[in-house]
Length: 128
Image (cartoon, rainbow, N blue to C red; front, side, top):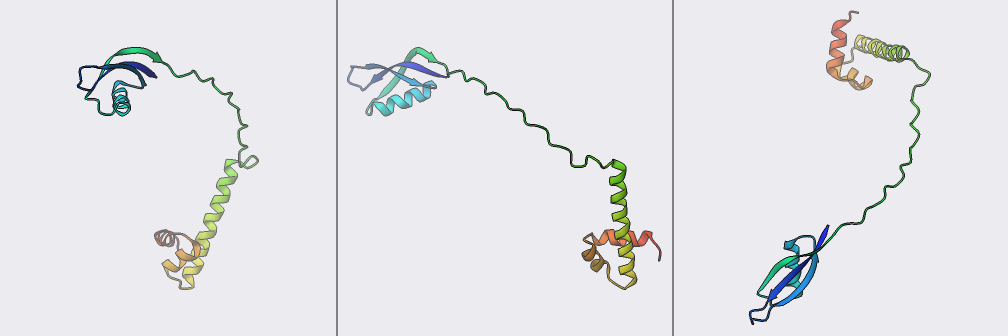
């Protein structure tokens, strides 16, 4: 929103000039007046002549996009758990085999891409 301000510019010679300036607030109106009238000693805002409201924008039509299809449409939650469980069991079995061959915990962790603490915990809970 902007306003048109009526202003009084004084140069110190006793003959003030009246004018109008359009700005968003009084501070900007004074700044613009001082920039337009160099050498002015003072700028006084005497009132608001008119208020200018921004144009009302029409809302654009929102296009609804289709929702993405789920990644697993034919796999149940139980099947996913079974797959995860078998991957975990396979890693545990590989961990046991590598340790039986004498590979260190860090070496096992690097090969299986898991943490050495996990290797230590797995091997502690299982017996050979």
